[in-house]
Image 1 (tube, rainbow, N blue to C red):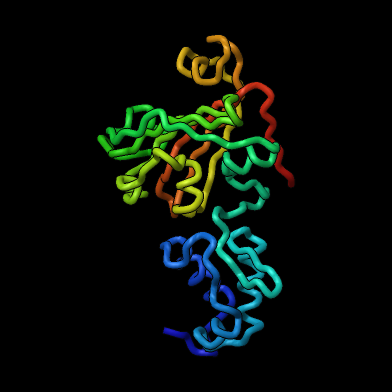
Image 2 (cartoon, rainbow, N blue to C red):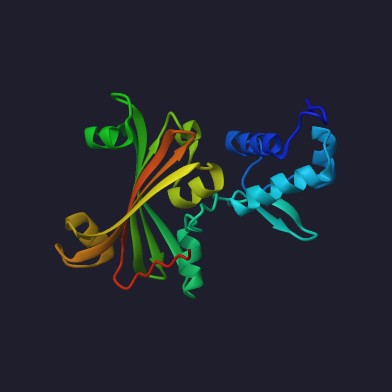
Length: 234
């Protein structure tokens, strides 16, 4: 129900828009109603709507383009301007040909170390996906990921045989917080086999945890082939 002109503020509109994005009512890449339509809905001025939309765009939730309208970003761009990269885009940006291969996808009980890391309740269900990303026939990234079923129930029906969990999550589930860690680890036998390196070699490794409204969504470890470079801007 639209609020009265006396009580609707740009903050009210921001909260409503964010709620619709996070609930999935407004899906990633969907086009929002224009400012005039939103002004009618909220019984306020277009100036009030404009301020709300502008701040949400500055905070990384929306993309605004002249004459093209306002769309929900596939993944919110946090203040440091780091976006969760889609591996396909990374490979293609290098001029390569992206190829994906599923290794395994299984529903299982979260291991103890994962439960402790994400503060999960005992015996909570997760979907464990392992997959490879290639640049042509050259290994690019080995991905080892756990997705919390309670936070993302639709993952139980997801088919990762053709689309990887990285791409599926970016297109399906928004996030409100992200924790990123980068480190050099030594390749164990599994990682070495997938990346075509020698066991014990140092490998650039990324760990990423995402949350949605305080609920853990996924924990991923990404192991990159030699020569990988990650760049962001502040």
